[in-house]
Image (cartoon, rainbow, N blue to C red; front, side, top):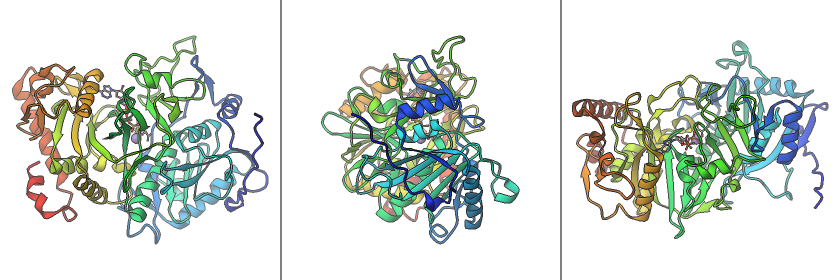
Length: 531
Ligand SMILES: Nc1ncnc2c1ncn2[C@@H]1O[C@H](COP(=O)(O)OP(=O)(O)OP(=O)(O)O)[C@@H](O)[C@H]1O
Ligand SMILES: O=C([O-])CC(=O)C(=O)O
Ligand SMILES: [Mn+2]
């Protein structure tokens, strides 16, 4: 079938000038050809396009701004996560950025977000490079050809080569990512890291869905069993959302960003963005097989003299990544919608090595852990983080939340009340000692624990309560040695274990003080205080 040439849409609303060369809605193959021609990257032996994203190989949360105006002023939780910038500075940067692009070639792509049509928003992604446009093709939802070209709700412009002048433009440094809810635009400059593009729209949805639709947006992955039972996996970067949601026994809904509507869980995205560090076919077969012609590898290294990727080489960054459309995973569900969840997993990569590998939470504990959002930030995804750091990131995604965390926590609380949901805390981090002494939990054990929880194998199990965290730990679990289920048993020195456990527990309590409990029913306050 010959492909008809799509007409370039009207871009006059962007004032890009008459000299701009527009490449509209190129196919992945065309984008890959262009990327090679532009010397943006090379093809790996697997056929995937491998690029370097430049100075930035992770997001830069300190350079993420929201325009403060009448739409946002009273709604947004301003501070060091949501940094204010004025509409005037935005307009000035927009003018400079469009001038910068004026005599260049740009890639324009129309797409959308939200697999559930009740929430769908149209998005135009304009990029300076072909590989960024390939990323947009993979990560956003790919539209039918008819209906293409009309002016979208949201426009993203991403130009790695454009640098802001902090003294004049009101940015912190040359790179920036700015969201304007009134003009419905995201401007990204000075960085070629593609994560900024997806997390820009995620931040937008984290505002629109709760505010306009009373719908919970979530930094989580989701999959569904053969009986239609949905599981969602919350967790910060690197805790295992992508890895654990790719399960040959379950259909994949999505790996990172979802909404929980009235009667469904739905993916915001059309693809996955997986970490590649130490990837092997044996440990992560589905992800490994998704790396083929079409996929976009970022910041990897080849074995010398070859085009074979050395996934253990992280000399450019720990945060090596691959982006691919969701249907590169065999059992992906399209459109990516499922029933409301039966099981919720909170994933944490505990670098203290003191949290149990799996424990079952009551409603108060679930709210406590959701609001706490504990993990050790693993190196790479954010610039400047080079080894695991104790992190509390509310709702497991504070960096992407324009509203106060209590808004999301209240929505989750309501949903947990309404639907019978099992909530589990899973430590995908360290065991047998803290970071540096212990080891990362074996992936095969974590998978076995999750499978057991999903299959109901932990329902009639005996549990014991953790002395410090009060979490209920199963005494046994198919496929997992009993002795690792109680983390204290994996440490050679009990005193050291409990000292560390109390240290973490104190950090939890200290962090939780920031939350006023106004949005939480009074009946839960006492129980929450005991968490
Ligand atoms: N026990 C374990 N459970 C889960 N992942 C593990 C475990 N041990 C090691 N890992 C590794 O940790 C990483 C988890 O990364 P993953 O891509 O799943 O993160 P993510 O939660 O999807 O993060 P992001 O939001 O940044 O995409 C993978 O590289 C995986 O191989
Ligand atoms: O956004 C990124 O760059 C990758 C990601 O999913 C995260 O950090 O949560
Ligand atoms: Mn993520």
